[in-house]
Structure formats: C-alpha cells, structure tokens
Length: 365
Image 1 (cartoon, helix red, strand yellow):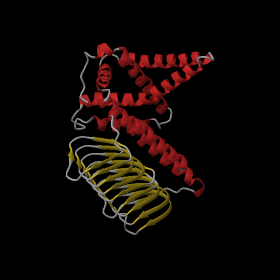
Image 2 (cartoon, helix red, strand yellow):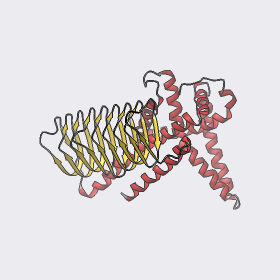
Image 3 (tube, one colour):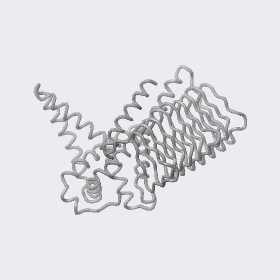
Image 4 (tube, helix red, strand yellow):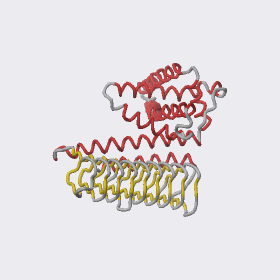
C-alpha cells in the first residue's frame, strides 16, 4: 500500500503543478459559500476544497481534502490525497480516487465509481444507480437503487439496502439478512493470492481514473491556455490530412529516436540525448490524450446535442473506452500503437501546417 500511496501523491503533485500553472492561480484553499451559484464547469487544485453553494456543471478537483455540502448539477471527478466527503446533492456520476477515506451521505442521481482505503455509503445516502467500489474496507449503510459491484481486500459491511444485485469479493463480510433484494454473487479468492488479486483490481481501476484525469487536465490546458492550437489541430484532422498525420507520427518517432541515439554515441552529446529522449517520452505520454481530445472535438462538432454541447462527456467516454480496448489481447497493443503514432503526428502536424489550419474549420469547444 505504501507504493500505491506514493503513486497517488506523485500524481497529485504533478497534476496540481500542471493545473495550477494553467489557471495561473496560487489558491491553496477554496470555499464556495452557501447561496452562491457557479453557472459553468468548475476546476480546482490545491490543499482543501469545500462547496456549500451550487455548481451548474461538472466539478473537477485535485486536492488533499474535499468537502461537498452543496449541489452539483453535473458529474464529479475527484483525486484526493486524504479524505473526500459528499453531504450534498449530485445530479450526475461520481468518480473518486482517495488515499484514505471516501464518505458519501448525500443524494446521488447517477452511479458512483470509487477507489479508497475506506469507502462508506452512510445511512442518509441514496444512490439512484449503481455503485462500483474498490478498497480495503467498504461499508454500505444507505440505499443503492441498482447494483453494487464491490471489491474489499479486508472487510465488507452491508447494513443498508441494495435493490439490485450484489457482486463482491472480500476476506470477511457482515451482510445483514434481506439487505440485498436481488441476487448475490461471490467470487472466491484464496487467502494466498487475495492480496495479488485485490492489488491488480485496485491498480487497474485507479489507473483508469488517473488516465481520465490526465486527459481532462490536457483538455483544460487546450481549452483555456492553448485554445487556438487546439482548434487548428482538430480542424486539420477534419481535412484531408489523416494519412499525413500518421506518417508525421511514424517519421517523427523514428527521427527523434535516431537523434537521441546519435547523441548517446558521442560522449559529449549524452546530456542532449537524455533531454531529447525525455522530450520524446513526454510527448508520447500526452499524445494519447491529444488524440482522444481531438477525436472528441470532431464527434462533438458533428453531434453537439448528444452531450449537451459539452465535449468533456466525449473525452471521458473515449478515455474509458480506450482503457478497456487496450486490455484486449493482441488487438489492444496494436490499437495503442496506432493511437500513439497518430497523436504524435497530430502534435507535429499542428505546427507544420499552422498557416493552413487557420483557414480550416472552427470547431466548437
């Protein structure tokens, strides 16, 4: 668990630096007062976040501690180092990864996806859809209107009501009789491989959530900092440049790698080779996000009503789809390679065709 905590903290620090730098704010704490309404999506990164008002949009938070007492009329995405508590009303889905504890006591009109050491659905909570939880300890005291899919590496406690089916894994359980109205399915896990099983499951789910957050951070940067570059890149893909972008990516990867090797051959050029290699790895890391965001812009421009004109929905959807596709044997690695090359080519092509792109389509962000 120490390694997982270190990974979480590292991601928090890196994400915070990127997002704070993009927003050009030095906020350590933000408290939205009662009675105040924010009529748009809201982003925050810092130490502490507290919402006592109303947010008419989705909420994206990277912080140590998060407290939601008010109302959020959209989805919630939280990456928390310590604890996340939701007492208010959420009219969308919830995605939370917290190191220590997640506690939900309010009403959630969507589904909940959580990863934490301790995850608790308290007695006053009402979840309108399904619950997906991974943690060392999971406690259900409230009401789940649909199914519950739970992975507890230690203890599972169910004293509330699950109106749908319950699927779970746990070392020890305390499930009150008649608390599950649907079917209960148990997947047996031997004690000697329990830690490995739960570690893999927890790691995959956290990896998916972290991947979504990374793409949302890239989206934020492109939407508010590099807005014009984003429009140009997307417009190029709408034109007849698809094959060229793939070629740019392939040649760019081989060329960058060749330059790095050439520097490494020369003793004097080793530092420059390391810089080139680190730059290439950084571009490769964000190339997947660039491709997903560009694809989201294209789909969003053609079907703006499907996601209410908000391309964030497409970014999240394509990120989840990509996370599942890459797990498919044989096909997954091929898709990953093609996406990376295409994304790398988009980065190169957006600069190479800069002048031409200004005359192309102007996409809705």
